[in-house]
Image (cartoon, rainbow, N blue to C red; front, top):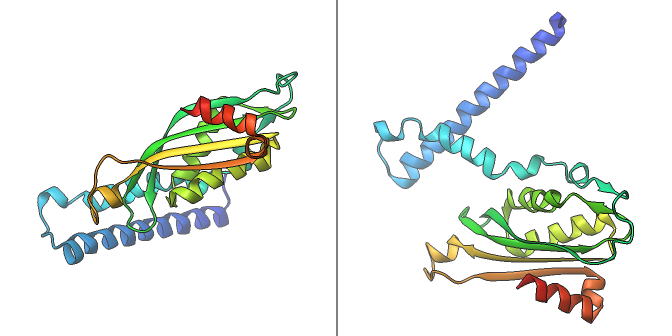
Length: 203
């Protein structure tokens, strides 16, 4: 059973959350009506609440514990010194300059050095960094650096191929092209044969 102090603390936390939610929804309503120029109408009544909920999901990567996510295993890594690669991981992000969509795929590879990680974790770490306000160059390097730091592999390679709605739906308004960025670490960067293998498998 909770003490009176604990119940009071919980009540205050719930009240704080309630007022923050109201503040967030009012901010979205101001954007709709004052900035965009829309008029209050039935179809927009629940839009502020939906937008707040959506943005919490779109930026949920900020709350992900990357070190806890990248739990490594030595069991199963015996004699495993060849490249491990996961291709075409879906990426959904938001441009930090215009809050427009960035979407595409990531290919991630590493060469084990006595440790391996669950394959799904490569997708999860990519998603964790993508679910933030981003630029593609930083996103690519953050994924590579996280794997390099926590797996301590012989090498890491990351390639992201993505489309940017900040260019396609505004500004220059050119559709269909892709931006490709890469980040290489360890032998995948310094050894020409390892680099060639990674780039070949990434196609």
